[in-house]
Amino acid sequence: MRRHRPASAQLRILSLIGAGGALAFGAAAIPLLALSGPPQSGTVVISAATGAASGGVQQPAAPAPAAETFATHCATCHGTTGKGDGPASYLLFPKPRDFTSGVYRFKSTYDQAPPTKADLERNIRNGIARTAMPAFNSILSDAEIASLVDYVLSLNERPWPGLSVEPAAIPPRPEFNAGLIDQGQRVFVAMGCAPCHGETGRGDGPSALGLLDANDYPLPPADFTTGVFKAGRTPEDLYRTVLVGVPGTPMPSFKAAMEANIKVEGLDPSTDMVWALVAYIQSLAEPRERDGITSGATITASASRSAKMLADPFDPAWNGIEPVAVSLQPLWQRRHSTRSAEVRAARAGDRVAFCVEWADETVDGSETLSSATDSVGLMFSLTPEIPTLTMGLAKQDAPSVVNLWQWKASRQIDADAGDRQDIDVLSEDQPVDTYPFKKGALVAGPLTEHDPTYVSAWGAGNPQSDPNLMKRPVLCMNAAGFGSTTIAPPDDQNVDGVGRWRDGVWRVVFVRDLHAHHEGDVDFATMARVPVAFAVWDGAAMDRNGTKLISGWHWLELGR
Image 1 (cartoon, rainbow, N blue to C red):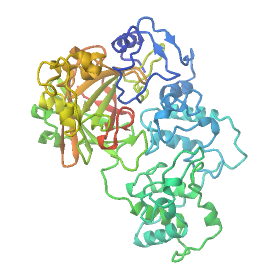
Image 2 (image 1 turned 30 degrees about the vertical axis):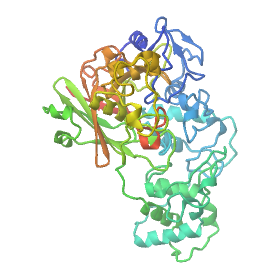
Image 3 (image 1 turned 120 degrees about the vertical axis):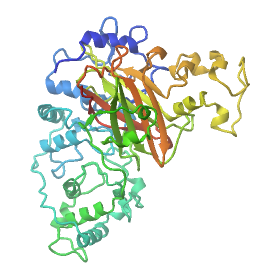
Image 4 (image 1 turned 90 degrees about the vertical axis):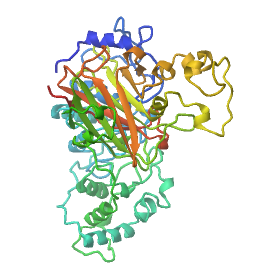
């Protein structure tokens, strides 16, 4: 696919990110969809002046298509050789799979048999819910996915035993009715599911806290009430998991029980016990926000003449636009999290606006050592090509730069008040120091009354504390790889926004001109389809930096 911008232009954009000709890290690097932290081994740092790579892993001169796809979309987590040791791996839980070990958890073959190609294709297309593994359906082509499957299988360093690679047979699904659900509950009790999954399926059984996987990592059992399962969304996916089990975990296979013809009291002899159990498990799901699309959704901007909607997330005009629900999944596993965000887009004259809505029971609007703020971010590719989900990639010949917008509830409170939240606002009972050389009141007051020498972040040049950005709820940033996010200078901050919370829901509106203001901006005026991804931080869950919920890549169409 032809690039919208040549590689030389992408290298010039790095000068917006760089400090002294290299990617900037440190105080100004506030990661959005990437995972926060200093440069890790394997990070390629590119000079904006010369484009020469220095340090880390060198990119091959002419990589095979599958190897290049793996390097772009997989290596940041799974590592350049597939050992699960990528620079982002330490920030993820569950941990990325080590492909060299030959152990795959979500497959259709029994015991230590290798997975089928269809198993890997399913996991790549759909992602793995409740983990950091994103979906690539409608993002990578069928040919790219097929070649990636072969490449991943080739990374195995341990010969598989000579076992059958035939997938387990899944019989036709019966009607799920009250009778089958009742029989499934009997199977649940008789087969000993409750000690791990709990008597009501909430994953809180007496053995739950002590469960470990084969690598001795904690492995909490699934909470069936969420209705979200790592192996897939369909009843057939759940059937396969129950029947085959999950290798490398305490979840056993039901095959032995079925072959042993174990009798379950009250179970009709003609009933498939696995289908009965699946029917019961699915009946435990509690109503929540609707499931979102994992990747490849098309978000179309509707034409609008309402100026009010650009400044009011709950303006009725937004309700006239059909939302697209995009799936969200945590980078660090948690018992409960928001399942999806609903996205709307509108064009109003020469401006484009996005309204992002997600469920959140509480408003969290402060950032301290003991608190985190609610937040939402958008990430755009600067070309029609899909970059890596961890904020682009600093490739030597063609760096992949992304444009990031992030709204924070804490910044919204500052903007609404026209002043920064100070320690007397954040905690009434906390002792405070007076500020030396402050012009106004000794404690509270505008940040501009202070001397930067005594405001550490501001004095160190962290743009988050720049008084010129204090009244902006949204900050615009650029990045070209893991740990490289840099906030644009005040004069280049051109994204407006406002967020409001009502009845357990956040709605945030982002607004910007269609045309790019500078080379680091995504140019909506010239791109027919723009790759876009989303991230949500829940302050109540102490989300910050790389601990958050992310979507896969989707497509924005603005029309002409």
